[in-house]
Length: 412
View 1 (spheres, rainbow, N blue to C red):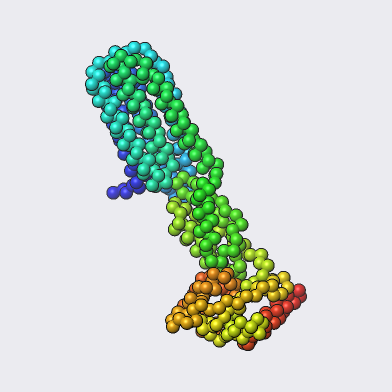
View 2 (view 1 turned 30 degrees about the horizontal axis):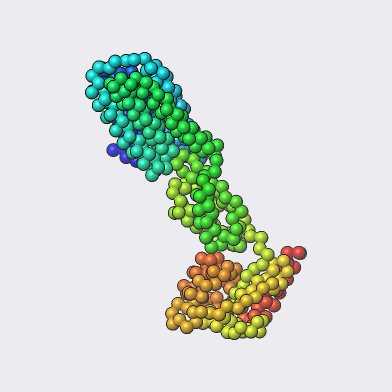
């Protein structure tokens, strides 16, 4: 047994219900002599054709990408929506013509049956419209939403038919054509909105600002992302394609790949119907590198390096300019978790992660690697450097020597 998605089921239901209503309205229209009912039946037949088009569009768009169409067939839905917009314009034109023709006095027969048929059509069309709009919005199907809006215009048409029959019964023959012209205005407005949305997607226009802003927020929250250089996102059918260019301080290719995967996973979990996220990663043009050193005291450059990460009294955080490795800033933060009996290292690691540390210089990097604090810092893409230096001054001298050796090797 073939299993159909909700959007395709809704399209099939639409075809069946609309075809049934068209048959009822045409039969009663011929029986009663109501031009309005016959015209509405013909109008409903155009809806059946439109619904078949929506179903075919959904079937085509759900096909897997091929070598000739590597980005899939998602826009088939938007092409169908474009055709539906044109069908709505045509329906409005037909209603205006019918309204003008109905200025002639027509005496109906079997009026109660005609009123019942018009009322049934009105109720069922309203329910069908609400159903298609609900499923279309929940499944992010533009063609189904377009078809739902089209059906909503049919509610107005059915109301006009009902008023026209009632007006004929009470002798108000001009009520139907005047109401028909007013409804045509709403029909043209609905068609314009669908046409505009379809063309925007077909021309790869950007998605709405709120969604773009949310994607930017989600990507910025990922540890390792220093800056978002550019963000583009477009709709294709009910799916969204995102393209990001970010800056990162990471140099290890495996970590860069892991960061890209993490960003893609976060965006897809936060945003519905995101099909693909392409992340371009560029190295950050850093002016300085931020270091953290666990210390036993706050004594500026003379501060002694602590042998215990979680049990350090203070942490010296300093920045060194990448161009010449000169010290540009230094601060000490007191360890607020030193009094804890358990998980001191974990809490300190979480604190340092908020300080956007690039490197942790410590005497016990091997020991930290065995503890939970290591995973917190690794997730924040903090690198480790082990040292035998006893003071912050010695560490800074050591870092400057490494920088000079690296520059000398690069110049050779």
